[in-house]
View 1 (cartoon, rainbow, N blue to C red):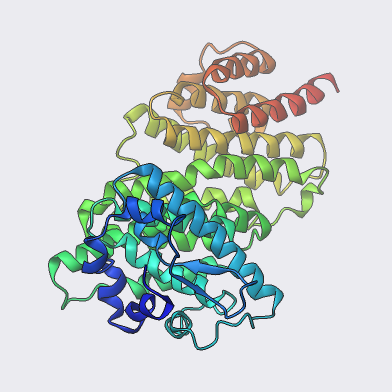
View 2: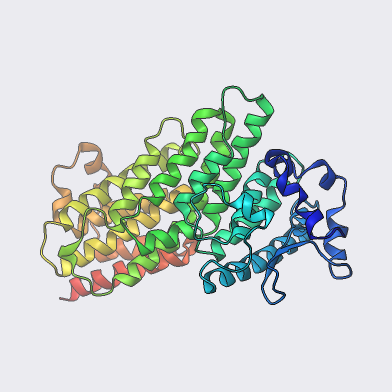
Length: 421
């Protein structure tokens, strides 16, 4: 293995060729054997002069492009551990952990908006982003895996700065060759997928409900569709990854509210913001998010959105009490069903229609001004509210997730109190 100075030689060269394709020299070496030999031979690392301080082993990056998934996973896990230790040391030393003058630090000093991150971490993020744009087989998977894990583990990485950095690092211009532009666009998509799968967006939204992170993230992902049509389907997949995370987010939000004062709901609370998020995404013509929905799913989806909007408006008008609590619980259930329709087309449209009918039985103001079509749907529906509610819940339970079950439980509890009151 080369010594420290030899390992950092590539950091001084052309940045695009060094990490964009992980260099011709790296392609000629076997990543599996490199990773396995690290226990036998000295490894190239970027560390401080003190032996007690952690460092980053650059050799691990080669393992991320291995054709063996186990090698990619091991390399990603080791990189996460090393970067976590490096960042911890950096924070404990107030940003003075001996990395000054290192070639990696010189590269990391570029304006990337991540000044709170250790130089080695900033270098690694840059390398990960270039790696997901590499056309080498398996490189995108490995580097995306490592990027997602590092984002999830190290919260010093700010998402807004990272998203801006992704666009800057993987810039697409009119003067680019076709393949280079394609690689950069795919790289952005893989990088965004890493962010979605890290759960950081959900966590940030939970800690700051005024955050525009979801809106900004979806805007960045959907902007790719406007550039190339072939990115539509994978872009939708990335958004659905985020939607899948929102199930748990909504459940946690509902649990955390506890005995909050219902007349203090603000227009930008989680429930309202989520609904606006879904409406915004569904209204973007270039996004084929809803093409997978059949007519019945599409009809049920629109009815759920309309019903949630009515309940939201009415909830703000009524005084705190049983009715407002029931409305609030029902809104969360409606949103969980919206997610299920997106994630599992064809499975929940009947239950969704039944639930909207159930809402009209529960809240008299919803039946005012019904259209002829809506009256036909409810014709003959003589059973009482609780009967319809129980039947609807029973139809949902065999296919429901944990978050959906919790939302069902809350509606049932609030409705039971109302009936027995």
